[in-house]
Length: 342
Image 1 (cartoon, one colour):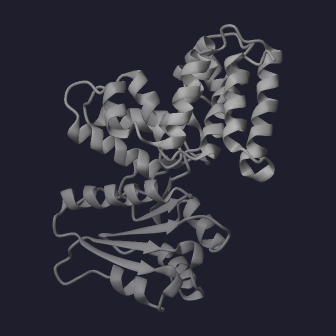
Image 2 (cartoon, rainbow, N blue to C red):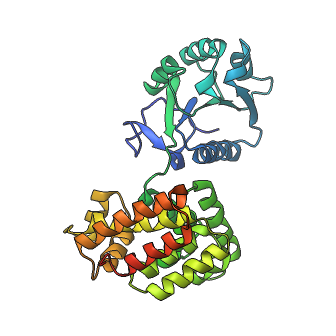
């Protein structure tokens, strides 16, 4: 059996002191899994189930929906069974809980059942605030596992690094950059891509490996176009752009890729200090700072400003304000390749 404790967990990364991150989940009488990132929440809950099953394979797992809850269900499921097997009760939709669940859950905190582990998944909002406040004070031995959306590039980078490190696989920095460029919008897709590379690729995972598997991703093509243009290779960038569009790429993410790279360059321009210090200050990864510094060679502040104006104009044109999206994109590429010197 997993050990029970009501001792407050050590301070960890998260929105409040005393919370754990998704990968720090551990058994407790009641585990509040909070936050908007459903993929990480599911992972945390699966990890808890695996921990408890490894401790005792006879673990009984049951599910409750807090939005469609009948009075007395929680107490009944948590009650000791004939053979005293440990029980894991997974409660979903706590952010939509009805009054019956709220009343029973608050009552349950006063005297949690022995050998029972209750996981309450709350995806955000104010519903159930009284319950949340009680859980966050540690009532009933509760702990909180915060599963927040990975918004910063540095957070996604750290997530991907951990995926490969935990699997004991080597991946080059360039391959990581390419992977993040291809799957920057969805952590579930990023995790799936990491898993596929870990399972299928042999030896060290390089940029060529990532390109073999995911070179057709729209985002990857868009960033390749942006990289070539920012480096001043106008002809190459135009060729990549036409190839990407012919392959079905959407102009909108292409402009977004340019904007993302130029924004990082603008934030790094004029900064002093180590890559790690600057990365911490601007919410980026150190490799992004290093890349931006290389990209900034030959650029001026005025040139960056001009390019941002062109990007904004191009964005409007491809979303309906112009008649020829391709012309607008090619004009943008040429101006960026000229480092804004028009």
